Image (cartoon, rainbow, N blue to C red; front, top):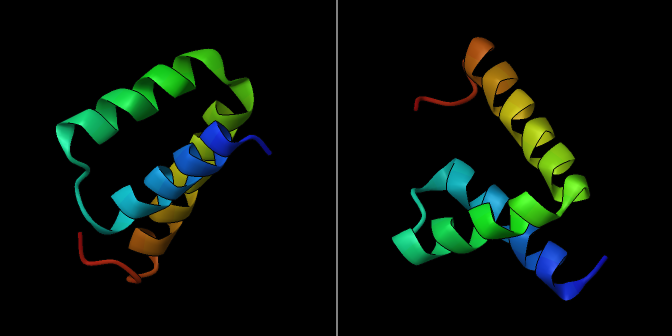
Amino acid sequence: MSRSCRRASELMSQQMEQPLIWYQRLGLRAHLLMCAGCRRAEKQFRFLRSAARQIGGLDK
């Protein structure tokens, strides 16, 4: 995993807990435009968040 993919993964995880700062969101979006692997990971993060909400694991 490249350093930029590792950072993207950290940001995707972080945004599940709190909103990202605008430049973090911008950097993540730019990375996702170029990286299919991280787009798949983001889709998985979104699925997990949705599943957690459905079982009452997250209040947001």
